[in-house]
Length: 277
Image (cartoon, rainbow, N blue to C red; front, side):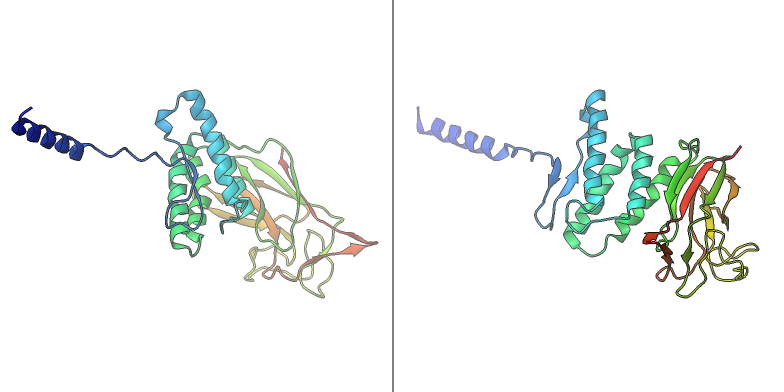
């Protein structure tokens, strides 16, 4: 082989080597900690590469993985309100395809938090708005069964349950359970304090018939419409549009409320929602 041909072959090989593309980085999948991040974030699969069966399983897996972080189980500084997580989960279980739409955005919020730190408020606000976004114009949750829970005197609006337009819901609190709505107040049940009207006050329920310490019900519709009315020991509310209802006691300071204790047993007001005939 002459020198000219050898030089030409060497130059050709160098050119080919220089033009060869580096291997593509493997796509991030599952829990991955990227350089610069304090903790791992969950990366969903490339949905379009999955077959129908695998895609269905992957949606359920992705939701389960994201919820481990939302509930604080990963101990990475992320933990959201339990009721909000339940609302998001319920919405996504009703429309599992939406997991694909929101999982990538969830990763972006996680990356931002793990990189910059600070507050998770923007992430939380986005999550809390998902149920309304996904269920807009649709109602998958008509109230057909009786719902029963207990009233937490230290929490605001609670025991959220979805309703559909036209649902008639009987809301009631137990009569035999008593509590104080401020230190030294009379012991009252869900009916509230008959001697203290809240009409015209700055309490959540301040229309005629509202009392201090009373069980009240809150309806929020898809359009943003809000209705607050006294529930007491029993009221029927008709949903003017699809949305949700929830309850609390009519009070502006929840830190000093307490249940009555008798014979070593603490009272607990029971809450019941059921379809009304």
